[in-house]
Length: 600
Image (cartoon, rainbow, N blue to C red):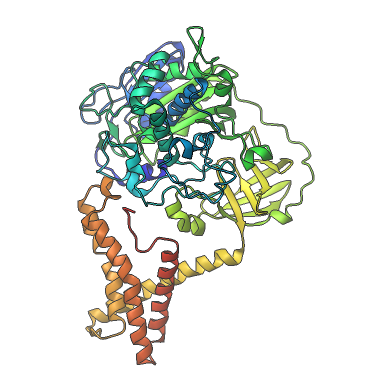
């Protein structure tokens, strides 16, 4: 969900940001307050609330229009941090003996049919959903960009019959791939066990005992609750709360003080008032990756039971971030030091560097850990591992072609380890730490691992993202396909428009229909401009027209190509351009990108 909402935030921009204003309580928060307020202004964010467990603070404004100051008791929405709370609710049911982490999900939700090639030996289990290792896709466009979701809709509405959404892409339990669908299924599991809506159950059975009385899993709007801060995008563009099909994965409203209470509980012994509430062994495993290829290879960073072990800013913490319409948030715990922080912003700004706030809070609470001293690295032969790697799996299955073509990385041997050269990022020198583990600069723990999958494929993993080695011939064929198709489109558009301007393009010319097919791609643009961006995943006139014109494109190319070949000489370059576009259309269709149906 984070990538799609970030795209929306990047596209929206209307109103100018406001000046920072802060209110803080407690000595630690008082010393942080002016620094956070200054950083808030520098990053062009509207407002923030935070907690360092014992102290809380606020800065900025709660609404860009009214300029009302953000108060410590303002409520905020935290997006995917809801997953940590939902996972805690699941662990409560496990502690009570009503669920087991190894229970197959199909037993609990028989109406949900998984397309799992490994079903006989490796069904999707409850722990796989909690750890994002089920192999499921993250989310589809229509599940996020929609005006049709209702806050009272059954959770099964996110999984229409026959939609094919429950396709398992790798052996369950082996690799991490973030999945909002998986946590939506966990909401359904809770409802199947407790026989009531998950929101009502968790509000009463989890939040109330924890003393989180200003928090709720229920849908809350700014109009219904004046204490809920207004959400914003860039330049102060306001955006109120909206219901979602995936609400168990990202719907939660809270305060800084309540999140401080929650953080203290997670680092405790699992008891409330002297009585065991959650098995402490389960709490300790939150943030510990288990069972995956990466964990078996020795990586300690990764995701487990609703938290992720981060290695940033010279510190190792167990954290979860969140992003939803107009809000961003971060929760981080340092169990050994019994420290932690929560911070939330009522602005989702693509250009802002939120990690600067995380670093400020973390370094104010916990001394940085020493980076391991350089030593002679163990012997390592990089040659078998050199080559080209692509995401396996990628996060959004519908974008797997784009992630394969543009999300690849090259691995080369160099110095005392490897050089990792992502296409869309800076090169990283990885130092060999022994046994196939590697450490990136500035990291306390090994950050990457090389391993062989059960199928014998060479894998490079960070614990939360795996890349599989592929042949350069395979990648180059895709690059050539894209390049040829784009050049063909450019040729048809340029030559066709030039001839059209000179009135030398009769209707029966071989170039006429391909040019019409290319120009038709522009027809949906004014319709999309006039509709809300939040309707991009809905079936509208604009999205229907987009599907039609993208389906018509290869037909237009085929018709023009046939006519050009029939006419013979003088049309070879035109025919090559049409063939280039046609082959790209065929490739895109094979990857389920043509016709382009945003609602599917």
